[in-house]
Amino acid sequence: MKTMAWIIGLTAAISIFYGQLTRGANTAPTGQETASSATTETGKPPMPQVVAQCATCHGEDGVSDTRYVPHLAGQRRGYLMIQLRAFRDNTRNNPGMHAVVRPLSESAIEDTAAYYWAQGQVKRSNTDGGSSVNLDQKLTELVEKCDRCHEPNEFNKDAIQQYPILAGQRREYLAHEMRDFQSKHMRENAMMYAMTDLLAGEEVDKLATYYETRRSTMRVGRH
Ligand code: HEC
Ligand code: HEC
Image (tube, rainbow, N blue to C red; front, top):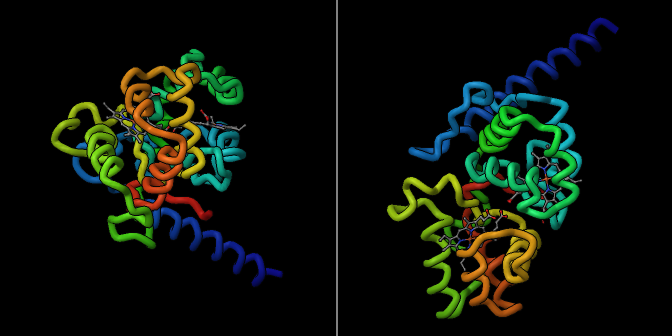
């Protein structure tokens, strides 16, 4: 019995240590995208009970296994905070998310956002920067515009934290959100209304798959 307990203890210790190690490796985004919350530098949940609740839909550590539920792991901290406040204030309309965010204090929102951002940025193993989707000329030119906001570059140095990472996000979710912008009543954003107005139905799905399969700066799921 004693040996058994010892083995279990050792296994737990190793997995905790290994967890810290891999988290450490994943929590080193570069430059201005660095996650900088003292409470979450080790990737430790600031409020285990809150994060456990999120995990029932968004998956363990924010890696979603569910088609229409977005990954949170590795998503930008500033963007996550904006969205959590928007769900709380019903400027982004989603009753389920409204219910879970409403009880959270402002500092709980900040800690939760920092926690998911710190869950790391892991590259997809199946791509080398390209995507499995070939885009025609119209979509190629359009993606250059999308990336001016969504990918880090010289144009958005100061604003980047407000824009969501798309690369590596679930395709069904991305397509669903683009259609929400097209319908102009679920999420309010004039620029995204204008951008998605340029897209026909099948182009929405094509872009969603394009971004899901593009090399990701976001932690990617097990789907
Ligand atoms: C009952 C399921 C459920 C629970 C629990 C839940 N979420 Fe969500 N969450 C969703 C769904 C579904 C969406 C997509 C909403 C949409 O389509 O607009 C979402 C969207 C989000 C988004 C927007 C992501 C993006 O890319 O714009 C954030 C941030 C988020 N959730 C954070 C959380 C946090 C933090 C918790 C825990 C406090 C949580 N969620 C708990 C289902 C859930
Ligand atoms: C001028 C900046 C800008 C451009 C250009 C832009 N976006 Fe966005 N996009 C945003 C912002 C800001 C948001 C978050 C809006 C909000 O707060 O609801 C967003 C949100 C999104 C979302 C929702 C992601 C999520 O996690 O919920 C998708 C999908 C998206 N954009 C796709 C695109 C595509 C595809 C293009 C090009 C056709 C594009 N965007 C061009 C600024 C931009």
